[in-house]
Structures are given as C-alpha cells and as structure tokens.
Length: 100
Image (tube, rainbow, N blue to C red; front, side, top):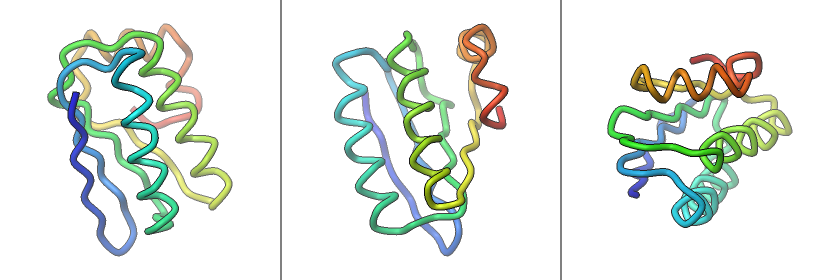
C-alpha cells in the first residue's frame, strides 16, 4: 500500500494504491493525520483509483479521518473508487457521512 499526499490552498488529496488492510491502514492513518495537522485543509480527498482491495480497516480509516476533519470544520470526499470499493462503502453506511 502506498499513499501519495498532495496539498494546495484548500484541499489535501491522498492518492491511495494497492491493498488497504489491517497492516497498511495504521501507517496510512499516521501519514494523513500528520498532513491534516500541518495543512489544516478545508477538504480531504481520498483518491481510491489505484486501490485493489479494502477490508473493514479501510472503512475505519475513512471514518477516523471524517472525525478529525469535522474538528477543523472540514469535509471528506472519496474519489475514483471502483464499483467493488463503492459497494463495501455503501454496505457499511459510509455514504451517509462522506461524499462518494
């Protein structure tokens, strides 16, 4: 799993690739949280375009970032998720708290 983070004036975009599971989620969370703390973006965009697999750890990753962004009055968006990833997100109810 790899996460490439880009920041601009208002948004922090995280390009995720590979598999998001228990082992990779902790490192990704840490990297994203540090970037949020540093840049304090209005929007966090999680780009799932290159994600090949995601389990419940991925749902937890997104939900945790939603909580952090809410503390700074920001929002979270999911971009480029495959139909399989979208299905996992919808089944978890994630679309009620984040724009997919």
